[in-house]
Length: 166
Image (tube, rainbow, N blue to C red; front, side, top):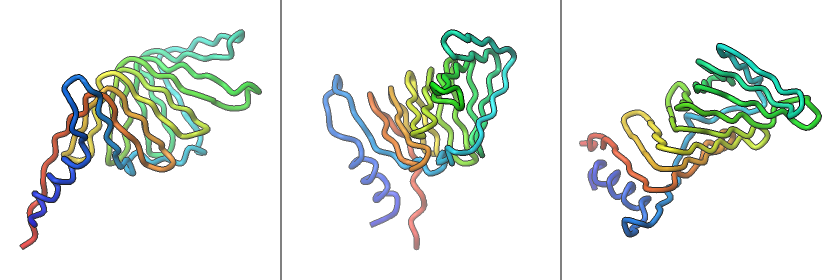
């Protein structure tokens, strides 16, 4: 069987057959976005405001969050600290969020990164790009430690099949 046909059959097998109103879910491999979540998190932005009462810090304007080879860009990032104040619990991002690694990229309207579990939940007009392949949907949930995830909602993909081996 030619490689292009195998690739098409694999994609079709991943996409459930549903009605137009039904929601789809597709499991995807995100090894390019895999990250060691124990590495330090560096945040830069145009401004910072801190609320001592809630224990939150909000970075605004040209926000860049870096951890290892992963870079996250957003309009704002709200940092929720652990109860003991000794680390970051979550990073809540808004304003067309972009996660990028050397090989993969994902963008959405908003995202929540839970540091302890390595889970990222991206919502609102999600687009995942892996090489020439794209997958879009309403919600992307992925685990940075495992490099696995799922796209939910009205899932659509575009892929470029490889050439068949002679």
